[in-house]
Image (cartoon, rainbow, N blue to C red; front, side, top):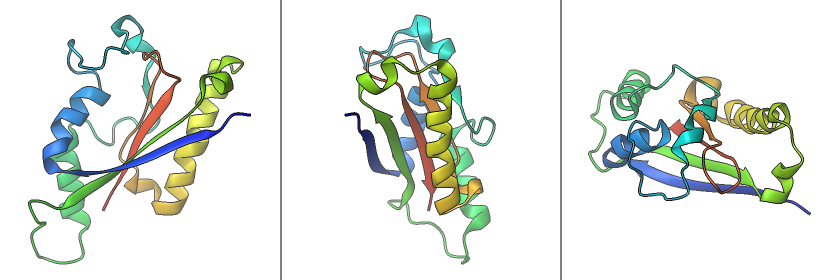
Length: 140
């Protein structure tokens, strides 16, 4: 029997530049040896265009939508990032369309729970040797 893998990580401002470079594959040298750069063109973002520069875009979004005039603390958690996946057996028999539907359903769940506008990215990585997985976030 297959299972959902879901992991949440709280991220602060200092984490967002490196995270953006990694998730959007802006660098050619990765510390993660599971990345096959020849397959990076297969990756896709289910909410493309909302966040192109993670740190500046997410900080601007939070500043535009905060309810008080107080400054955001420098050490504040800005993003709850979720990694969604399953085991390799689950993905073995799925078509590319079914895989996309799986991740879109996960993205839609978070959009319904936290608001569509709060899902700033939902990147599906198909260029790693581990099962496909999606990264997404909700700024708070």
